[in-house]
Image (cartoon, rainbow, N blue to C red; front, side, top):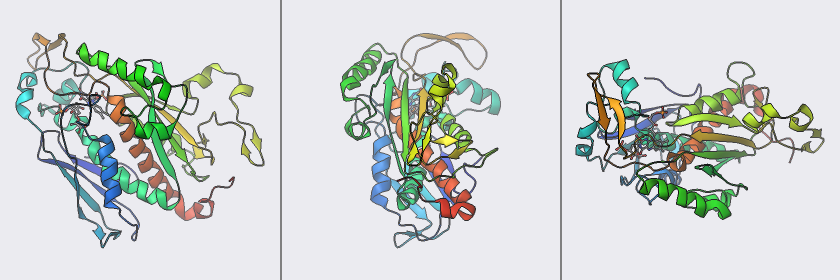
Length: 357
Ligand SMILES: Cc1cc2nc3c(=O)[nH]c(=O)nc-3n(C[C@H](O)[C@H](O)[C@H](O)COP(=O)(O)O)c2cc1C
Ligand SMILES: C=C(O[C@@H]1CC(C(=O)O)=C[C@@H](OP(=O)(O)O)[C@H]1O)C(=O)O
């Protein structure tokens, strides 16, 4: 078992078809107001079974706080939260008991551990990300105290790219699309893939406003390396871009540099991070999700005895994991920033103010 973070630490437990999942969050200063309504709102944004664009598995994802909170305030001791599974229906998964689903973690889990919870992938199911969102909500409550805002949305589905990033619209969109004009095309792509028993990939954008200058350790715990680590730890994430990301490699220096004025940077190609340290501009990160591996088309695979067999899946699956994945990415960003704030607070406390406003 491992945990995430150095000062704001969390670890999760539980399986998709087990009794419950949850997390333990440690390192939160005492006296933080723990708004349970806000935690639940965050859970509701990610939870499955809400609409045609998510898996049909219906879960309430109600969070119960077991420890670390007294009279609505954090006590400075570990906060444990539990979410009971309600809609496991493990009989749906008997057909995958002995075979490895192409694109999923079955093959590697089996070979690494010699035992595998085949009920929907067990620990490898992104059901685990419910617990991350609960932990991320606590991180957000801390960030809110410093007016640091983390938001996200979908900028691309099946190659259909948003040409704007309207986070207010994304909050209302069923698929969290950042672009009102592209939303219908993106939705159509998801529904078509679903109709064809297939799946599509997508890209989420996470944006941070009011991040103070100075977060990030300059060598081995650079802010961008920690963000990349956090995002790549989410199921199905295959790439992370900071600022202009991969496009920077094909630009000239003059085009890519962000010129500096007394009022701040003129542009933000760097995505708010220079030398592994936040520069006070918005942090922008793109997260690339592959298409859902569990699809309902016939595929070739092997079973645990190395026999070549056909794989024909049943069950309930997201047609596009990027949609709910964007909420998870937002939570992971909040967790990284909360950790970095606590890590850098003692030496950088005087910098916990935005210089340019
Ligand atoms: C929010 C979210 C929901 C997901 N839902 C499904 C799903 O319904 N079916 C599925 O096969 N994979 C789903 N995945 C992806 C798998 O969990 C993931 O591909 C698998 O664990 C293998 O890991 P890897 O893709 O990171 O290599 C989901 C991922 C996320 C982030
Ligand atoms: C249940 C959730 O998502 C699940 C993520 C997932 C996967 O393979 O990642 C597979 C499906 O469920 P199961 O584990 O039952 O096969 C999704 O429904 C959830 O997000 O709460």
